[in-house]
Length: 271
Image (tube, rainbow, N blue to C red; front, side, top):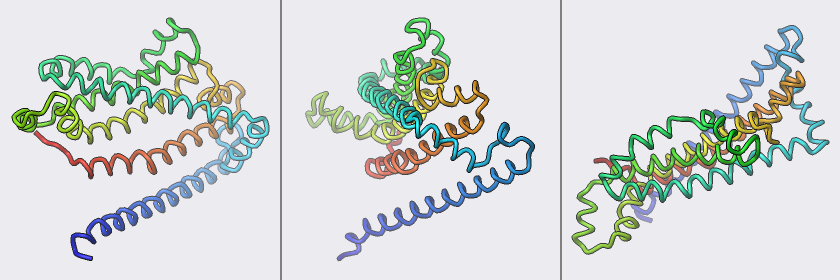
């Protein structure tokens, strides 16, 4: 085996070592948080009301599991996230590409896209409620809105970052408009697609929780809100733990490696 052949294996080994190291650090951090949480809970008055211990919070899930409510809430939230994120990304990527095909149109729409990306889905929630009421449709529209603009804006930015000399060279070689998009613009924008996808799913995760709270739809967000109404702090903390741990697992083991591999594969394009 030559030195060139062994280089990819070294990179994979190094990446695996770094990933394992991060996983160990994450476990140590979580253990530390649980210990600190237990100490604070034991030190305060009326911990069941103000800060139940980790074990109390964990045991609170038993009743919800026996009733089948916890699994139902969790799957409802995840299904909304998956459907809304996929729709937002599938619509946002071609939309950003189409805007980026023309530099004049891209420059015209850039501030508008930046504006909508800065307006959170929760900010438009009251308007959507007026249109569709407190329904599952309202929550899905907010998720779709929240996931659409980050990916579309990033794809637009990625297409704009492709140097004009690459496009001109492709045209000189007789490439069609479709070939320029497929072989020049899309590969050049791939790092932005990866970053935008991760941002979109992250924003959608926040939107689905908030949407379930405000619209009263079944899910982890509604479970937390119900815990507040029932004065059940353990249920609130349980929902918070599920939300946080789910995102850590999703981001650490799926989104971040996918983003890193995409950037490593396609590279960053600079003007």
